[in-house]
Image (cartoon, rainbow, N blue to C red; front, side, top):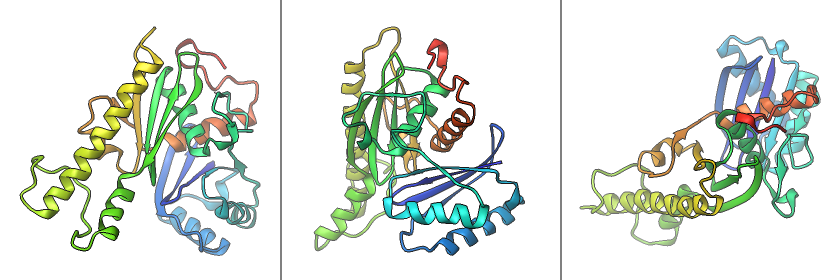
Amino acid sequence: MLLVIDAGNTNTSLGVFQGTELVAHWRLTTARSRTVDEYGVHARNLFELAGIDFKAINAIAIASVVPPLNYTLKTMAETYFHLTPLFVDHTTDTGLTILYEPAGDVGADRIVDAVAAIEKYGAPCIVVDFGTATTFNAINHAAQYLGGVITPGIMISSDALFERTAKLPRVDIRRPGQVIGSSTIAAMQSGLYHGFVGLVDGVLRKMIEEIGNAPRTPRVIATGGLASLIATGSEFIELVDDTLTLEGLRLIHERNISPKSSVLSPKGVVS
């Protein structure tokens, strides 16, 4: 069985694959101060609750955008699983051509998302990942990673309103019943939701124009914590895939244990 870990700035997602089947997955708060033993015990407890044999894990793949956690996760894998994990970065054999400059600046999560999107949905496509930052990732018709757009996440915007204003409260992020808010909370929720949907669709409209629509218009896939919420109001988001990053880690691990296999072969595009 394969354990995959996506370590983000706000949340850390874990998944367990039996072959190509995702048999269990969890989302935890990212805690930079958590020790090797704490991560190990958390993993053991999650496995026990899901009825998964801890000793059945024979490989681990990790995508991390939190460098201080890398040593902790590596040591946890070695200590509790007796395995050396595969850390994905721009030097990993993913089958993806990265045109970003420098390639080392592309976050591991963005690489992994692109690999999964190409395999599952074909190229061209755009992946919008709603994390601490919201990233827009563009893949062209030749399944090449072009680059994208990075904006503050909606929670960063919400926190800024609360922290930088004297009278505005912290609010839940939700879709309001109408645009014009009849209270301060409703007005803030409307501004955050509709303002962010407008940002997302404005960026996507321009990205789609730049990529072009031949032989087809790019598909737009959303993932991340608030993807489902924002997708309900978006003109361009076609579908939400909550486990896209975990699937990408599985595909990259598969490619690295079977290098001759063509993992990126979506709808006629061969790696």
